[in-house]
Image (cartoon, rainbow, N blue to C red):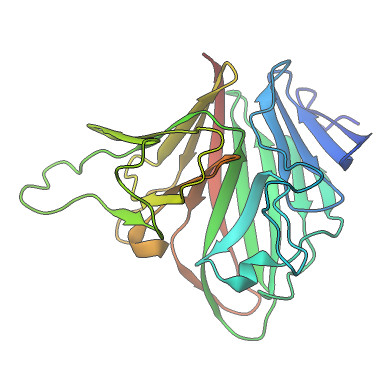
Length: 284
């Protein structure tokens, strides 16, 4: 298959993980699962290794629930704040439509949240990939939520931009949120003047999740000879979840997650909202 734009190609392949939609502009390869999800299971420069984590078939990393949800790996689309309803078992096939510059993935309405999710992948002329998360309230009542993009990565060195607000004077101007037993003394964590830095160390089990307000709207990870820079919104004057975070970082013994969040909105029945990430890949 080929999209209307000759610079983006698309095909469906049968793999040991099921049907995969493969997209490429000749510079960047993006692949998404069709037999479950929404999950973008592969992201890399053409000819290079996949930056996304893949959950072992035996699920030996333990990231599953009794109700049947499993991690799978890759990029997924959730709603904040996190709750038990976040873990709806998204194991059913999804639909896709080709776009002139990419493709859109469509999930059936999530009966636990009452929301229909779609994910659009746009290959921009500058070589970047725009990832547009779209949520529609299918319930009969309003829902307050923030759209949440989660990139489950196969390790690496990560940074979240954490610069000061100009002219802040004597007032605090940066937000940091910690979950659970997270320690600022964790050996995987360090700080630079305008960055939060973290390293994935395989096998380290200590719980670690951190959130921040990134006024620059940028984070990155370096791994496998590539750098992935993720850009996202940072709109002042709006309410963000998790005590004001638009960027979050989770470390486990098996993978790393870089997460972006949009502002909290109240979706009326039938209403839609969206949140974008921009993925920029380069060679180290």
